[in-house]
Image 1 (cartoon, rainbow, N blue to C red):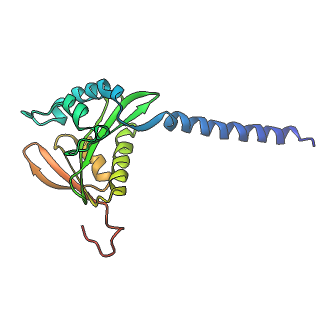
Image 2 (tube, rainbow, N blue to C red):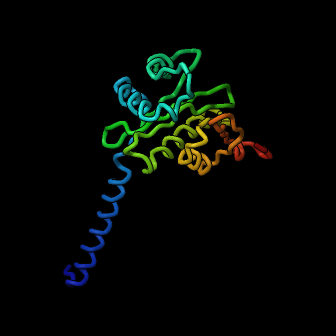
Image 3 (cartoon, rainbow, N blue to C red):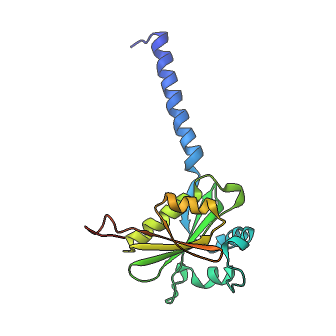
Length: 190
């Protein structure tokens, strides 16, 4: 079977466009991986936390990132608090993380969402939030709450985009919540 130069040109162009689209998608998305926390991630998480300690941790708090990672992570199966810690990697490097846990059978809390400064605005926060929300929903959680600083407008915009509603204000903080059960229970009102 023979093809005209025009037909061959169209075929080659179509293959190039298809490959270019695949390569472009992989470049944007293929190197982003969300995985559970591993002990080897400890230093990267502490570095990211320290970048924005004043935003993430209330002044005067006795919070310790080291204690959280060493004693509260779900991998260690502490009965009093199984904290899920999930990281997002780009080309193997930890660029962000989220921590969350169940408060009871129907309520969950997102404790921290943090993205390294050089990686913000690329969708990592949204992907980590969606992962946490889907994970908690699969465990029967109907309501998720979180707290952030009033001054943290990028985070507030992300939470609103994901369906969270501002519920309360106290000092420098705003509390958000979202209902995941609206489509699970007929007639449910949040």
